[in-house]
Amino acid sequence: MKSLSALVALDPFDAGHALVTSPFFSPRVLAAIRLAVACYTFVTLAVAIIWGIVVDKDAAGFFSYFTHLTYCGICGYFLASGLHTALYARRGQRSYPLQRWPKPWRFLHLLLLSTITVFPILVSIVFWGLIAKPSTFDSRFDTWSAISVHLLNSVFALFEILLTNTPASAWIFLPFGIFFLACYVGVIYVTYATQGFYAYSFMNPSHGAVRLALYIAGIGVAECVLFSIVHGVVLLRQRGVKRFLSKPVSDVQSISSVSHDGHMWEDKAAAV
Image (cartoon, rainbow, N blue to C red; front, side):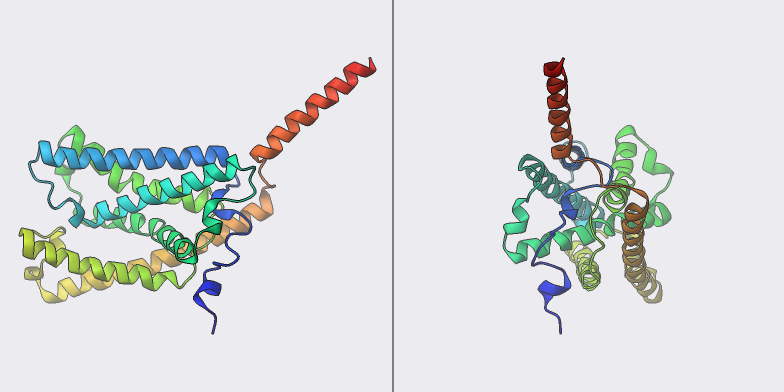
């Protein structure tokens, strides 16, 4: 039986630097985009919490919503990946710190990647399919908040899926995703017991045990389906890049090219 390290390729870890490169952007540009997303999501979370405290006078249940928990995951992933990508670019594209960190940190990074490419899409589907209503857009703040955490979240996930070299998540991460969702069901009922409300009304047992069971089972199935779709899309992206796109020009290659061209012009001038 293969070890966990072999199943998720922890050693050697990311020998091809797929986690910090893109077929469309140089590492410096990729780092800038990732850090920009990290900043935007952090500001969104901070503003939402402050708004809840100052305006709504109630921010106690903020982290009882799966939407906000997954948004925190997006913020954390893009911050970590952005910093590692920036360090990779700064160090001449030879390595980045995560490659030398202990295996548990590498595993957790890949686990986080497997969640931020699936959970945001699941959140968007559930919100726009079951929860959204005309009052969602009652004010400018509500509109901005809904777009930021229920629409842009999936845009950020699709960016990692389609426009970077990140590999397809190992299948071993799927049970972890299901486990996290099961744990969140517990959070919903702990929240009700301690704060008196259901974060998601369709999880209220008073609507019927069968209906509740169907919702829970449906979300579990959706997680499996979305994970499989994302896995397949990443494989297709890898094949498409390999077939139709040449290797992107790196920062180092760009600098070397400029330097080489400069020497050529100097040699020509000397010859004249």
